[in-house]
Image (cartoon, rainbow, N blue to C red):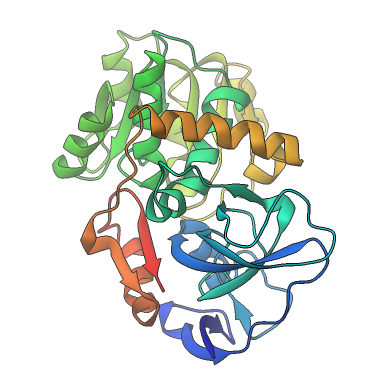
Length: 327
């Protein structure tokens, strides 16, 4: 008998339950993976709360993990029992000992990258890859703004920006998180609890502002993000930690300088096996080279039985970098 986390109604962390279950055999083009480490992502809280509805209850949770293939379904090519693998866009249910995943969502994990490194970085790292290399191609020497710079995605972005020779200005909520972001490679930080974001950014750029803002916070930072952009700048809204941006008046984009806005997601950029292989190789090369360190603090590794506390800590913004569930 295996264990999995599920929920039977939307709500707070208290709706999460650890239950016994018998895994089904993998279907055609699926592999069964014995998870060794499971990624916890902010999108998991959106799904639990109902911002993104599920197809049925009870529902599993989580889309990211790393482990070993134990069974291979019919039609699977390129994967075998015993392969070390990682995945980030699986059907809900990764918060479990065992998970069946379409083989097109799975990448082989290089031997020089641990299961914990894989599970802590795959979704977040692929996100940073498409943000900085595809949504807008950051150039060496370029100054740009990245919100929540001490979060799981943010710390990878700080390191990737440094490797590119770019100047990331990161927003943070405390001096402690400012130090984390700077250690990871942020060029400068703005403490949004103390400073007006747009005013501080203008000061840092000698009034120049920036060509691109990456914003996963959402509602609370929408207007201040637009105020940080140069004319014809790009606002990249890729998350809703403070709630979704709604009721947008498109005229404001005109008023603030003929701005562009995009609402991207990983699924929009990784649409094929070829896309996944290319993006994952780019990420693995950065990790293997040492340019990106994705090791997780011991205090942010939780057993499946402690999933409620893991979610509570994530949403209270008491974590920095990535958090993991360890089956």
